[in-house]
Each structure stands twice: as structure tokens, then as C-alpha cells.
Length: 74
Image: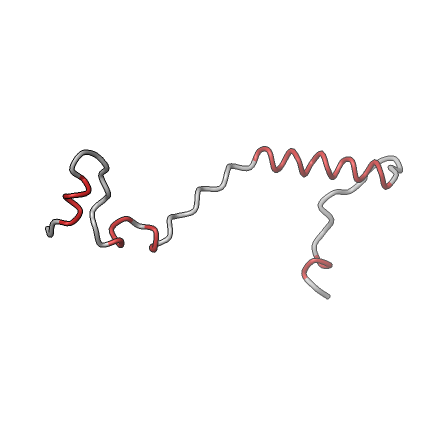
């Protein structure tokens, strides 16, 4: 037996005899409510390849004289 089969049911009907459609509607509502109340996932960290320091050169600055300055050694 797997762990899924050993776990108790998450929802149990204590009174009445709901149809399969009614149970499905309850599951959909509870799933939507749980997803809406969950905190948003944090944004992923930038890849080490995308870090500006790895590029090995300063940021490009467009403007007057930028083309000439790009050929000068630093």
C-alpha cells in the first residue's frame, strides 16, 4: 500500500447523500478558496549568467560621443 492509500480522507460526508456532481462542486470551491488564500510565490532569483558584473564591461551609455568613447581603452 502506498502512503496515499493510508491517509485519511480530506473530506467526509457526515449527513445526507450528495451526488458525484455535488461533491465535485464542493471540491472545486474548496480548491479555489485555498489557492486564493495562498501567499504568492517569490520571484525566482536571477541566473548567475544574467548578472551585469559577469559581463566584464561597464554598462553602455548612449549619447553624444559614446561611439568614440567605446573605442578608447580604459
